Length: 147
Image 1: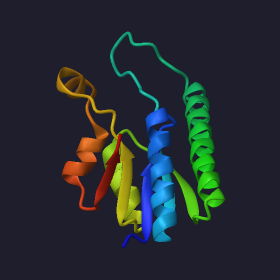
Image 2 (image 1 turned 60 degrees about the vertical axis):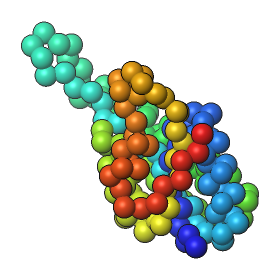
Image 3 (image 1 turned 90 degrees about the horizontal axis):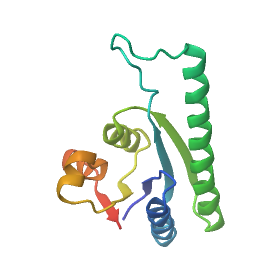
């Protein structure tokens, strides 16, 4: 049915639950797993009077974020390997999380995306947005949402 499954992770308890579900599904289907974490770019202020940050500080911070992300996806890959699931970890840097997820799924030829949903409703959903909702409504690859 599914040959390659992309699972997104942000290290939260809910995404860890989605990772466990994706690993179980991949094991049952004898599919490969791609673990993805999207790292945002360092926010820059272009307003007059805004605090300036040196390029070295920005680079150091982004490096730390990328190292943390790499550790996260490597941990997922180790969990998958323990369950005899072939896997790899992918870290992408982008401010457009949903688009980065869709792009990574296409690039790695994934035929299913597994994501967690926080289940926000009303004003919280409107204010905080939903990357899961964006992937669901704008993507062409099937999405399994776990909560």
